[in-house]
Image (cartoon, rainbow, N blue to C red; front, side):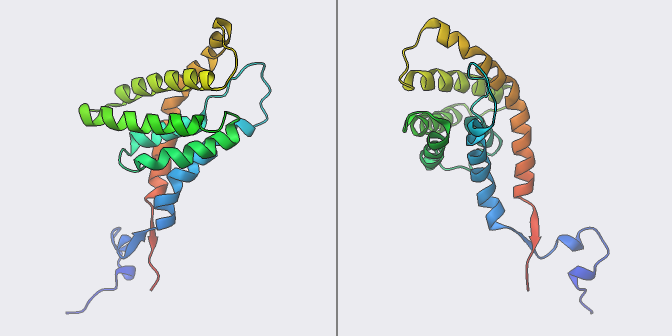
Length: 184
């Protein structure tokens, strides 16, 4: 019996045989996308109050909800440090808040394993409220009720953008799992 070369097959599945995932894409895309999200405070947006949501934190939440086991629990430390270096927050606030978020999400999912997009969105809203409030408290500024009202547009924009960012993360996840041809 003659063996067929998988590359010469004419059916649609022959072109996918003998391919593997790229390790650089599999492990690098989530980390790089979160770090790119943390670089958004450098965008040239001029506003009298904070308007841009913390995209690094939103990307972290989206990756955690789209692919629950992908990021290890200790990922909050390096990603929070990177966010602190580029967001203007005091050093350690992002480390603390990213790490606490990953721990709390893990504890909640262990206790309540059911999931849906609506529950993920509501959880992300609660985490965004916690993150923005805690970041304002950790910033070292004297806070008044007026300053907390100024954070409302940033919170609302974060809540509205979370489904879009989750969709972007799902597309990045498909890119991450693309198969590449194995050499040899």
